[in-house]
Length: 472
Image (cartoon, rainbow, N blue to C red; front, side):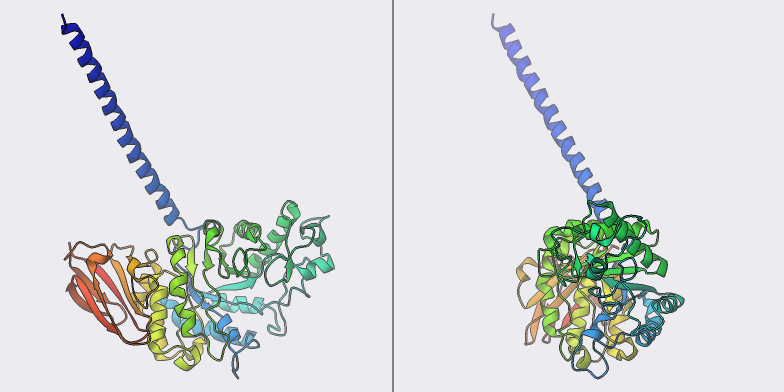
């Protein structure tokens, strides 16, 4: 009598079981789908080359600013920037081109003060006291040396353009006073411009005319400085300027690298990544003293870099400012240990790799640092390294990451004022316990051996940089 009821109950149980199996299968399938989708998204994020198809790797070159920022020098300083000195640096850069250095970037002081002088369309003009024949002979010389050239601007409409109410090139009706926000607002933290009103299409037209001018000149790199949120301030919001410039540069059909400065706010890094090829993570590396930089300039980057580590990738890279390690210790402001440590941090972080200082008098040690092809290879491949979590904020730190060829990069830093020992078991950086790796000392260009750990004694402010190839 109870058989039909029991049979019905069994069928119900079976149906519930089958539904659960189907549900579990769909759940697993959905999980696999999401995992693959995430992998694709990450692949796109780390494989594109930015809005302008540049910056698949960190930039390599030289910048002028450090030689203008130094104080109490009979040779360098604010007046150093001129046509003769830039042509000389371009000629000196030729020796470094076989190693990948090809950008020569002219920083601030190339233009007249935008508070007072602009061209007939409200754009920057060349300071002819520094460049008597204008910028074109400089650009042509740099290009003839098979190099790329960069210039520098600030966001916003120059105040001189507003005061003169200059016309907007390409418009029969718009003038400078039509394209700013009212009430008037500072356009950047240097207070040399007013904010543009991009709800008026003529504001975009103005930026496009500026970008077209640079493209016609043959400019290959543009640094926009005093960008906020950043530059020690949340205001003014320069993001509309950055978007307008990025899109205008693309429309010129000339490949122009876009770099942002300084101390960009990490809370907006997705925006910086979308529109720029690099962003300065800190203030200037220069100490504005009687040397080019100081140890304090390097030391602070170990903490400043942490929040930006996930965002350096093809298309846009973290910018630590110039790598000022080429000249002798007394000019640079670092001893040889500190110069190597700076280069190690830049390399393992895949930071923009552009030199500072006077290339005409780099010493042998500086040349050795800057032309080490194995170290440059680390900088130009892979993604930024990170420190062991247990080392963050300490004076002895181990940083590690992956190279594109599947090998690993490993660096040790003694930031202390006394000699310290560093020991790293490779299980701490993701290898299996006891797993061996071929270890290559990149600075000394020698093989260490097949080991599962390393122990190094480092003098104060010294470092090491190893390449690990896992033995399977």
